[in-house]
Image (cartoon, rainbow, N blue to C red; front, side, top):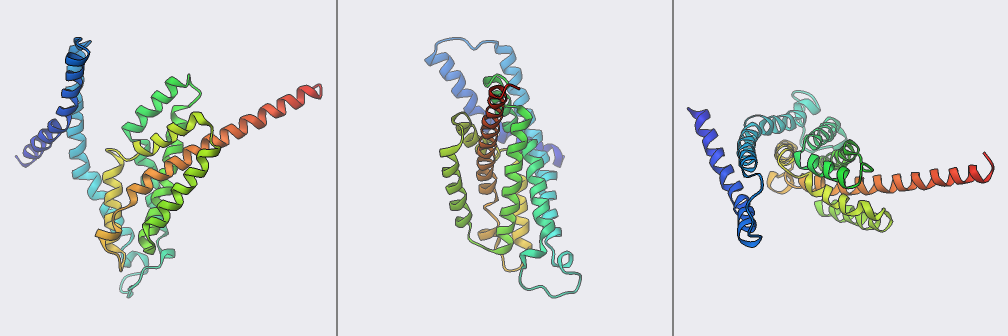
Length: 266
């Protein structure tokens, strides 16, 4: 009975979240555009699938992924694991937390690859670019950015350094990159930072940050436990812009080499 009560509670919450979206679509289609909804039956079936899918997904996150993420962070940052059982450990030494940085990077990469919103953006980017932007290539580049960001965010929690230093420094890099990156990649790079903080990544990353802050000596979960999601949004922008800069540089060098070979008679 407890399982069914949880299911229906999440189902009602999901209905409340989806209802405004459906209402706005119906309102604009019927009142503003004054047209009937095309393929109404398919749309209704799709809405039901979305509601049921989100419900089951959220229950899975709450029952499995969220607790596992927090438990892993606590176990990997437990003083007994870091320095050994029975050893007094009053202050955190950032050099002792290598497994936490690796786990943060791995979980950031894996959750981003599985992020539905990133899949949608990658497919659309591939479609509108006539295949020049590879779907898997974009997903991997974004996932690498998230992995680096989460690892650096874990380092920030362990070391206790101020969050604003990383955010200001990161966005300064983004601004500089924007001036040199190809124009066709800039908007996509900025959007890539937003789609990484969605249904899969946020719960697990938040659990990782809170679990880590609860275990590391001298850290306050309310002050240090949050902020990882900001890293997960920022560093994909940097990685996608860097990817665009590299591919642009590589293409120019390749064209230059081809022209030189033609000029030399090869």
